[in-house]
Image (cartoon, rainbow, N blue to C red; front, top):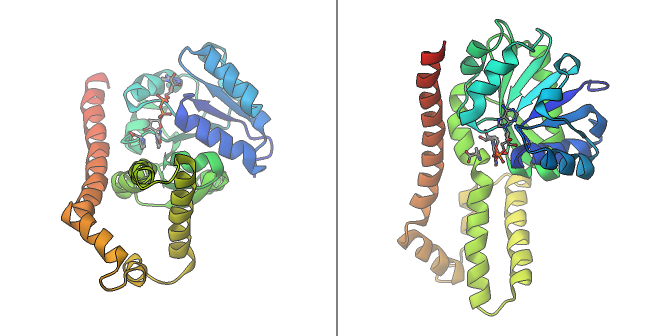
Length: 281
Ligand SMILES: NC(=O)C1=CN([C@@H]2O[C@H](COP(=O)(O)OP(=O)(O)OC[C@H]3O[C@@H](n4cnc5c(N)ncnc54)[C@H](O)[C@@H]3O)[C@@H](O)[C@H]2O)C=CC1
Ligand SMILES: O=C(O)[C@@H]1CCC=N1
């Protein structure tokens, strides 16, 4: 399916690198099929080229005719300019994927040539090791065949969920931003471990294995998080004491607020860009 297909990343930041690393390691896409470009930092392009064996090409030197899949990976604030300048280069057969938070398919379609096939994508940085939870939603002109191509390509970086675009904000709050919540939790557990007498490196490995084990239990057992939590919790035991502290300190509420606030921010980014775009078109 991907033999000879050429993929270009516009944007060479942390998300692009995570996807490039995952795709290159998958064996499904060869590094030589991948090109990455950015606004001006040529040193960064050289670094990615050396590290992954892909092509790092300055924006002015990109040869768009050769591209099959264009992946937008700049910040949302740069999307409008990027789409406007892409407009002149694209051909109808080229598929545009966007990993930008808050950028709707209709926003892209309005700024690209009429009928362009686009897919909105929300990956996370675990793409780096092929463990992303990625959502995709097709634009209104996107064929089933191109949606399948996007799905197969993104399976190189982890699990892919095809969702309704109206669910993209909440998906972003859970999975796009989600790794950061777990890292935040780990940072705090690590500090507690150290103050309890463990060294930092050992604590880190213990926490990672604990989170990995809990995640795999959810994936491999039929039971809900609630049931699994109850199985850890002995009456009047250590877990009950820990959970009580979490609950008393607003732990559950804080987690649910974090997800909702991130989803809300995704909505706000869309709304701000829509308002700005209406002044352009
Ligand atoms: N970092 C993350 O965990 C995730 C990020 N995303 C999305 O990925 C996008 C990129 O995020 P990061 O990699 O964190 O940002 P970043 O700031 O690290 O990288 C942005 C890159 O875009 C380049 N750029 C800007 N305008 C450009 C243009 N017109 N053409 C080509 N390149 C251009 C910049 O030079 C830079 O290389 C954002 O839109 C974000 O919403 C989505 C999911 C997760
Ligand atoms: O923080 C952000 O806006 C991006 C989108 C999801 C994760 N990082």
